[in-house]
Image (cartoon, rainbow, N blue to C red; front, side, top):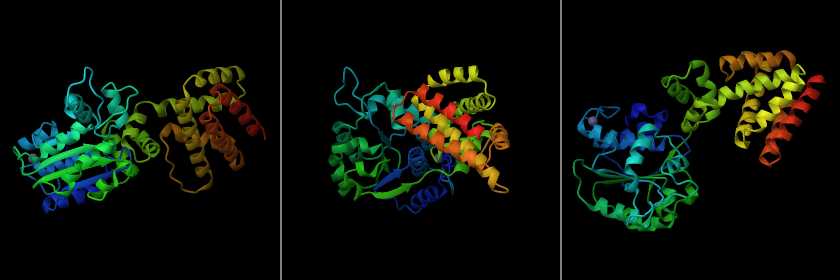
Amino acid sequence: MLFKDVIGQPEIRQHLLDIAKREKIPHAQLFMSQPGSGALALALAFTQYVVCVNKQDNDSCGVCSACIKAQKMIHPDIHYTYPIIAKRPSPHPSLSTDYIQEWREAITQNPYINELEWLQNIGAENKQGNITADEARNILSGLKLTTFEAEYKIQIIWMAEALSREGNILLKLLEEPPEKTILILIAENQEEILPTILSRCQLVKINKIDDASIAQALLKKGVPQSETTHIAYLADGNFNEALKLMDSETHGNTRLLTQWLDFSVNLKAGELLRWTEETGKMGRENIKSFLEYSTHIFREALMLLHIKEYSPRLAHDELTLASRINRFLNYEKLSDILQLINKKHYEIERNVSPKMVLMDMSLKVRKILKK
Ligand SMILES: [Zn+2]
């Protein structure tokens, strides 16, 4: 992966380039990351830069044989450890490389993938992924060998939380690292990393990606410019989430909200009933997401109403919707609706029947409108 393909994170990119160029690479780094913020993408770009034989000032060359191998994740000096479930019948020992083919495919397709999606990819269903003691020992012995092609031997450990107790096996490695080895641990929950490991790694904090970079990346993926801003806004710094939103959610939600308002405002009782039935079947998570989305639209409408020259985080059709809302709602009614939706969101979380919640919400919104 090239640095230029990493989304946002200019400071971390610069930091990683700097330490590689000055050959001041710490033996062990812990990338402590917000979900979907690109820790693995950064690690891939960094390790490719380290092995590239024709380094450019700000990126790998992308064409030398080391780069090609790194891109295909087949470089003999770059190793990957990630959570797995034991294969059935289980080979002994049970190692991350049991799933190397799946790993290469999944990560090539989306380096922002989360652990759950990865585990689903390898058929884990409800089982928890593990980094086994065998895998930890394998890392130890692997890093002791001399390199094949590169100057450094590199080990990436993705979702290092999955090491749990087996992490202690790596302590010796962290205390007395062999010459020319680079260890990169990637994690999202600092509390789940053994303190003994934490204290021996150089911590690299990876924050959320900024909205503008996410929007730009979506644009490159062919998302219309009118939609990139609100997807980025909803994704809140998580590019994996942005990819999911890109696929489905927003389109459906804009339609649902437009219908709900139309049926409620214009007293179309039969349609409203049908809407409640259908929407009630969407499942709790989808309904929550619809309510969150509606909150976002009403809040933006409220801002538009009250702040001169406010530039809203809305796509074209949403802007139309927000202006329509503002035509029949004033500040007081908008705040009441926001409170109402918030309360309904809470009830959905509390397992109240979705149909009841949506029906009650529709009845109450009519009262607010009539005020
Ligand atoms: Zn290269």
